[in-house]
Length: 389
Ligand code: PLP
Image (cartoon, rainbow, N blue to C red; front, side, top):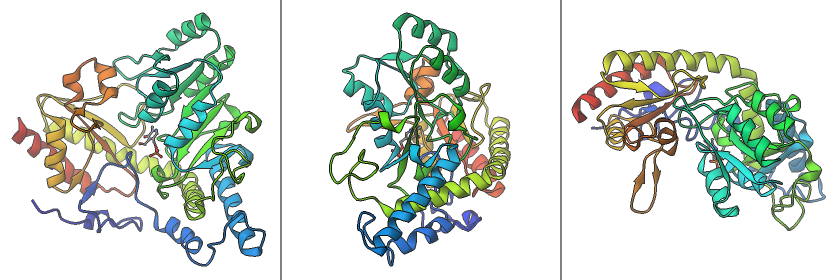
């Protein structure tokens, strides 16, 4: 089937016509670049190309642009600029933060691979797993028991889950960790721009966000730390990022990250209320048109843009492929290895069922999506599910 390229998506100035999909519902994987962000970045590819470490005027202009971007990123999360360290991706930021972990690590079983694989690698498989229940929630009493029994731990959890949108109670968890002198490392990649954050008033030790999840470019992310003096040197060399991460900065991406953070902060409530309406419309449409399906994590606090739906008896990979043929981009949360596809570890952790994990699809929306797109997805989903069943 030929996709009807992109006409519905040309709203809010973001035009997806070059994509081979009509409807992009995979915004937790990455977001399109906001045209205003591209505009802010462009001079740093062209006229303002100087190395920010150079002592001449063009060099100063580039380093000032980085300083402005740092303040903007800090503003989005309620931190101060000195607490923000730029790096290339959230994966790098998470690896960096955890390389700095003082104590044995306890991580939730639904963390992103950036956390789980780093911890397995660095701690030789010796780390503690924080379980989630059927709704994707953490058990704070069990965590308290663990902290009490094991002494201080470095706790690594995400603010919001990329597959289900389930939001962890970070405020309560941060207070609990503080009581047990246990540093809390937060993967805030999916929460940034979707939830209000106040790093200054939360006892979080470190936090990571990524530009390409907030309508910024790929190639920039931030590690935000409570106490910069305690942060290790991650990359040795010319001394950039206050001597913690050497290497000439990706100036255009950092500038774009700053611009995207400003837009995310200024428009957060408006974007989230629009996206919540669309997500609710999508869920009620699918539930009423498609028999035997259920929303994973539905009774939990969830991000407004994410819906993870299990379709009984339907292979999610096949379904995602059929939707793709209809010009609809969604994701299954599966990890692809060289020869196998591994169904979502997140849905498996919640349902304890390999089967359910292989029947679940993630729809992740953004403010550039429209009601027309939602209607199209509802009808394509019911057609595809009926066909596959
Ligand atoms: N953490 C979460 C929750 C994510 O969703 C992602 C990306 O999907 C990452 C970490 C990794 O981000 P990046 O692509 O910037 O490395």
